[in-house]
Image (cartoon, rainbow, N blue to C red; front, side, top):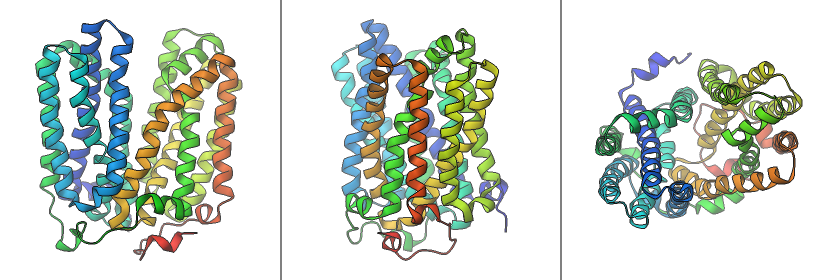
Length: 413
C-alpha cells in the first residue's frame, strides 16, 4: 500500500507533532534573529551579536550531553510538552532583560533556551515512530524535513522582516507563544500505555551504543566529515566563489545561495514521493548521494559559468536530502525505542560543537588556499564518505524492513 501525504495528514497525532515541529522551528529562528539584532543595536559590536550563536551552540552541547544520560527517564510526550513551556518562560525573561540591555545577563536565559531545546529533536525523533507506522515513517520524516528546509531558506529573511516591522515586545510575545503552543500540540497526543515505558529500566549507555553499533558509528563519522564539506555552502564561501571564480556580483551570490536550499526542499518532496523505491535501497542511496555530491561539487569547483553553477546547486539539493532522510530512517530502524532519544542526544552533543568548529577550520584553510581549492577539498571530503559506505557492508547493503527489530545489537559489530 502506497502511503500518501493525505493519509499522513489525516492522522491527528501526526498533525499535532508536525505543528509542534513547525512552531518550534519558527520560534528558534525568530529568537536568534531578534536577539542578534537587539544586541547589535545596543552594542554596535559584531562580536557581541555573534556571541548569541556561540552561546546557543554551547547550550546545545551541554543539553545534548545531559540528554544522552537522562532523557530516557521521562515520558516523551510530557518531555516535549515541558520543553515548549519552559522555553516560553525563558523567552519572556530574555525579553525583559533585553529591554534594559545587559549583554552578560541576556546570555544566561539564552543558554538555557538552547540547552533545553537540545532535548527537543532527540525526543521528537524518538516520538515519531510511535505516532506513525514503520511503513509511514520515511514519508513522515521527509514531511518534517521540509519544514526544516523551509526555515533554513526563509527563516532568517522572515525573521529580519518581522524584526523590522513589529515592535520588539510583539516579536518576543510571538516567539513565546510559538514555544508554548509547540508544547500544547504535543501534550494533546495520546499514546497507548505500552509506549510510556521510558521511565522503567535503564537503557544501555548512549555513548557505548554509538561506538559499538557499526551503522551508527559510521553515519556519525560521515556526518562529521560532511560537516566540514558543507561549510562551502555557507553564504561567505559562496560569495567568495561568486566574485573570484564566476566573476559575478552579489545578485548571483543570492541566486546560487537560494538554489542550493530550494534544491533541498525539492529533494525532500521527491523523497516523500519515492519512499517505496528507496526503502529496499536505502544503504545504496546513502552511498550514491555521497558519490554524487563529490562529483557535482568537483564540477561546481572547476566551472566558471554562472548558469551551470545554478543548475549544479539545484541538482545537489535533492541528492543530499535523499541521503538525509534515508539516514534518519536507518537510525530510527537500528536503535530500539527506549534508546532512540538518548543516542540522538549523544550524537547531537558531538555534532553541535563540531559544526561550529568546522567554520573555523575551513575559514583558516580558505585564508591559506584559494577558494577554488577549498571547493575541490570539499569534493574530496564527500568522496571519503562514499568510501566509508562502500567499505562497510552492513551500511552499504542496508534495507529498511517494515517488521520491528528486536534489538539494536542485531546490527552491532
